[in-house]
Length: 149
Image 1 (tube, one colour):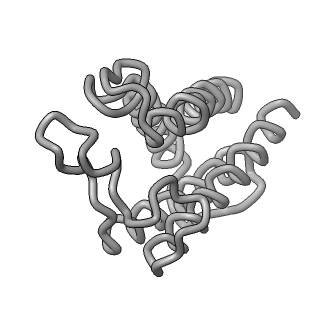
Image 2: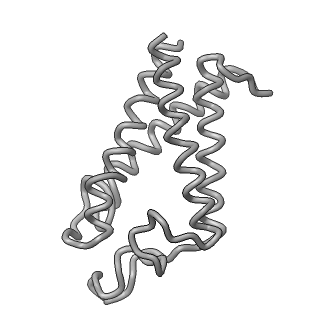
């Protein structure tokens, strides 16, 4: 029961993130901290250049990965069936939990718990939403995978 609840919550979050990334890849700006597609904002890094620029192929890829991850999470508890073996789903979810944990830990500069750049729009979004959400997904996917075994 708990595994199914976690799976539904995680899949809703992942599907919403996937939709948002596809929307951003299509040129949408809602919910994007900086509408020109730059993180952090120009001038806020040591060299004055943004750390990331929005690239459509990357945004679409992230959206696709979010949709696939949602399917894997739901498949782990039997809500949906996928044409892959159960071990593939299990190992994929271990990898996904690890990936979200790495995202939460960050890159030692602009993202995650190890970020050194503070006080920017992106840093505020990262501290309040992106990092906690990554940590939450990591923990819940880990727990889901453990109790679904």
